[in-house]
Length: 447
Image: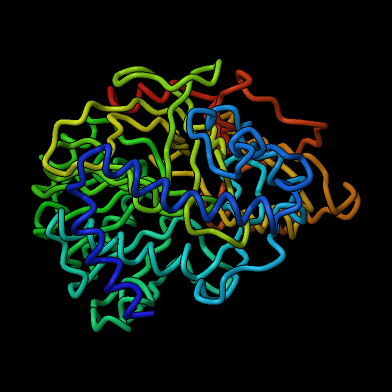
């Protein structure tokens, strides 16, 4: 593993300055074996012949017809798991791993990946990005963990000898301290200050809440060397304000469980550089045509190294705005990535917090296929459930209430409502698992 990671890191240092036409040929050299593998070993592609337009009579590939491949949807991934699973993978891709989405869209999906696609290439990419931002992974990192497994005491911390397991094999032993980000914002400030990290990894909403509560300006006093943000939309204005307050730079990255580590902000130009060595990213309009720089488009992703479950032109349901190429790093760039933006909940006593909880609790206690929790009053939430594995009579409402009161606020009142479906605001809108339906969140900044 360490040899693969180090060798790929050396490759990345060269490919990041490839001219666009050379990068396109590099990507196609990775696409060809993936497409042939999918056509031969994955029944979903083989039986539907959805890749057929690409292949000429002599079996060569007609790249001009790439956009004729129908996008792969989230529903495809949910309903066609078995048929999307390859009947074999190359032996040098390592073990096959099963992961699932966190359920942030309300509809979790399962994904198979190889160690090569999920761990080894991602580790090399992360190290390359650390080099861009001069981040030292042998220092101490405080990681505000967005979901808390059952065995994790949310009032304490969890310590690791390296930021990522693979870093230990590379002799990059910097301590990582996990802190549950489900506590009230002021408690998060106190917890971070107590461990005195060199770097902080946190989702934007939690970080903004912490800064809003930091009346004593204890966070700037930490002298942080850098911030790593992830998982939510971070506007350029918010990024600038946070950097000024904390007196350090932010590295914001974009990733998904389905397609892994996709893009990261550039320390030079400020745009998000796509990890074009491992994924092909497309931004398309409603007719499926590629959009120009500055225009809004829907994100489609093809992962080059996942031979266990090839995702070809997978629709992430996120909107992006491509950027023009104007940086010494020549990788394709996105100016903005519009993902999930989660508004805070506010309870009596200034208990402002970022709502989240382990999604498996909704499955275990309520058997929910899809769920949504909305704040509907100053002390009240409505928990909406699309039934799945349990009937209403079998659902453990008291246990779910006890968990949320322990994680959010001990005076919380919860109304449970069984529904047939939870509609989105528009057909293309992101599902909102924790909508704020009580107050205008913009008033927080005025109060």
